Image 1 (spheres, rainbow, N blue to C red):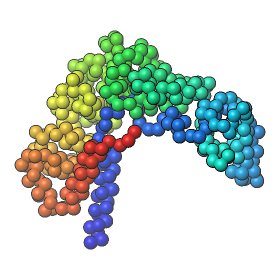
Image 2 (image 1 turned 90 degrees about the vertical axis):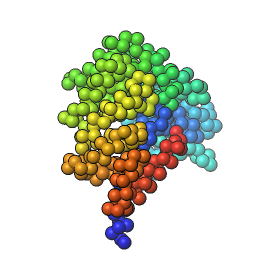
Image 3 (image 1 turned 45 degrees about the vertical axis):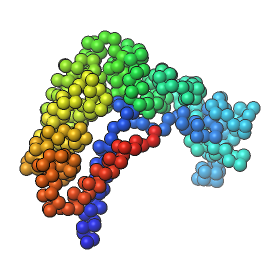
Image 4 (image 1 turned 60 degrees about the horizontal axis):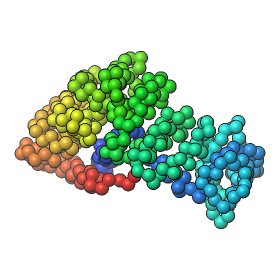
Length: 393
């Protein structure tokens, strides 16, 4: 009994990891970056937010930095509190050695008349106060208006600002993003994409904006393809957004390019995985550009590739591509695909497929290993619950 229970727990741990890799895609802006708390939300949660420089740091007892004090010269009160009214300097009960003339945004709680600074964020340049104040002014506006504000900060020299502006894009539903993206200046975005200094984690969003806003589709499509194809320019991040945007600008040529990546097993795994994510985008959001049947056909090319077949099977299951049931069940007989993660994907596909061959396969697996089937059924239930109830932003 103990051995079976241990094996069951290990199987569940593996399946929980699978949920993380195959979590349902909600309508949030794809290729815009990771969703998460924004600086605007952090400001809202803080009792007080100040901007300034640290001076005159005094340590407490030798080696006891926690007991020291530091003066904060206030240059700007971003979120006011009566405790700092008419003050241009306060003393914090923390030892914070000054780093040159570096300026900080300080997030504070105030409890029983005492200031508790819980986060200090160093900033570059002088844009942070104006950014936070402007973000606060548009926080209750329509997303179309808010995104225009944040667009102006996407390429800011302060990466805290640029990353936060990108996170604001990521938290917007795709239908809303789709409506406003065509009105952004495509020429400016193209320059950002050409700039070798542009951080790679911004490329997916920049490419997405260009795909929606381009006024010179041939030239911009050439730029996007060069980012993926040219060895001297080839990028390693945001490739899915670049590929999807290339296809948006030149559907026929771009789709053939993506199919070529998916078909070529010699391509780097991450490149093929990026192409798979691009295909998902067209099924989930833009079947008006690439028909679902074409996405299914393209992704099915991955079934012969043992290092990525499990991900392809999962997508084909979610897309209810039951016409591929016998082809997917046939993978169980391939020596190259005799891998636990692929076998589990085949089982999940079979549990969902209405075809007789799938039902027969499931019954066969129940006789061989009932617990593995029970685990798969449980995780499919969890997936369905997650699909029906999207997580809060």
